[in-house]
Length: 491
Image (cartoon, rainbow, N blue to C red; front, side, top):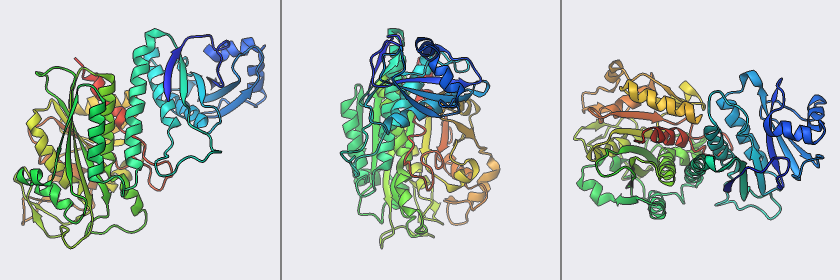
């Protein structure tokens, strides 16, 4: 979707579809008020009669309003004015994007950013609107092309505003592109999106963006580094593991980089600890941690942020096979710590622990790993928030604040020493599961053993990366949270 700015009056702009917002129990304002005046109060009368609904995320398409040049007007409701906040604003914009995606129009002019949203300025409102329209406009077509009689996504959208909002527009476009990449990678079937495919897509991305470079480590190199835990996960697969290292240099050689580490289990059968057959197909989403750090990397590079960023992707497939690792095995790790495997379905932390150890070489200002790590996280937080775990209060606050700003929210879970005892075993330095109680937290505790003396946080996105048994596919979260965190870190 091509996005541009246009400050032509809403009543005069020539467009197949003009998009405006209204609130319940509040006077019409901005473009909606201008349309009402130009049409002789027609919009107000339609609202009063119930033909146009101001309810939250309600959409009504109007044709041929007098005094207005636009062919159609899409009116989107924001619900009660007194409860209209950043979350409802983003959902309003998403509703508009989804409506337009399913309609015959392929161009639109959007005037939703004129609505006041808490204390946020016009730049934030426009950025979020551009991102949300693009997000709502996404449709997966790689293995299911659109039929000739089906509506096409928007090819272009203009947004009401002048050149002073050009940076906000560019940020919205970059966020949309990063989220789209994350969603596309997550939605691809596992017979296409293998570890090698993921590495190649990262290579293509690095070559297409400024100030970016890439290195891909294969099995021999990882074995020489002692990445026994990561390699153990992939022993049963015909698709060899990859460790992908993307670099973006936007702040000069002397600035410490921020490091994002993503779990890239391209398909997770559970290994020998085989998962139930129900919903196993959704385990193609087990690489969404990798997908989102790649998406955040793309957004950062497209915005040309003044930060240095390293993105590390541990790409591996977990399959049952005669060569697969087993419950009861004791394996090594790059950090020199031994791990007793009690459950081969707790594989993400094994891949991540070596990727985290490898990331030490970059002397990071902060390191954040992102993973669809535990079903226990979904039990705790549902599909609304990503779990944030860290021993650094300031880092937790930075991430949660970034999520609040981006409307891609996180919630902190404790990472107390009390939980560490659940990982004790007489046969190794630790075991890879701590039992049913606090399963999401003990997974974070496991990773914390490999990040001591680092400024580190773990983000569990098992609930936010996709909705269990849903039909919308990957969400692209938390690209918004991560990108906002990096925006906030600029010098």
